[in-house]
Length: 306
Image 1 (cartoon, rainbow, N blue to C red):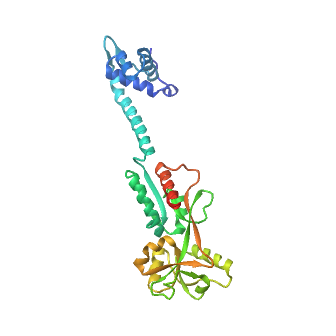
Image 2: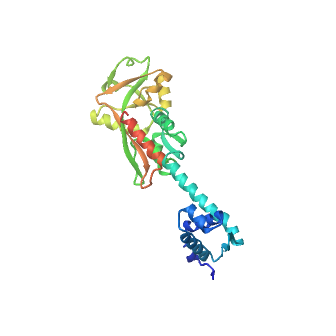
Image 3: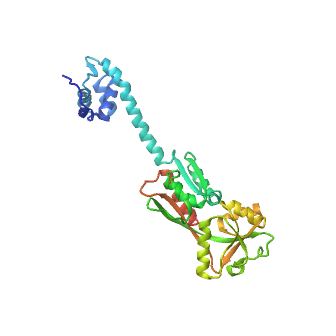
């Protein structure tokens, strides 16, 4: 005799029971269903009986041919939907693992985004064309905050304070170069010492980067400092102002891709040489998606010259 199911009994519902139910409904017999699901006839019969007891409903009329009851006919589409959803979940997980789907969300400073990071993204897209991309470009000072708020899964940028909720992985050291107009007296030099630049005026594009340079210069020679001619938000604007003669700038080497656009020369700085560490940023304690894991691998490979 079937009894009214309780909430605790409903927890006993299993996918094996629903598969057996669907197989018997399709085959019209317990014996044929057993062959389809690779179980014994008694095992299939037991699974269906357990499902009926759990639901408190008879699902089949058992005669010469097994047929669905009215309750069975109404519940069969629901069982098939659950089994289909499970199959889609399994296939979706497989697609995520094999990078046949998914979304890569990255943030980087504007100039780094359109030069070095863009080259890595091109390699990634060629290998995984079905993965979507959401690329945010920002100022270097905004990268960590964007990762912290979850607006990007990964950030790439220069060293910045992270706090306890954002983790960073070292990516590469980027040389800092002097940038001047092609008509500047220093334009034909291969290298320039900082001491030769003490009376120059500078276009500053990041107050944090400016403080970093000042600290390095002061540690080397307390008489050296940067006289500001203009201060802007983005490196591209700084390069444009250098090109029209507003002042000089100290910028990461990857920006040399735009030297021709603005009529600039990139020159090695000496006494002291300048480098800036760059990092990959992510939320601490959160597992990366498969696209993000693959992209981090590519970033590290490209940074190592691979």
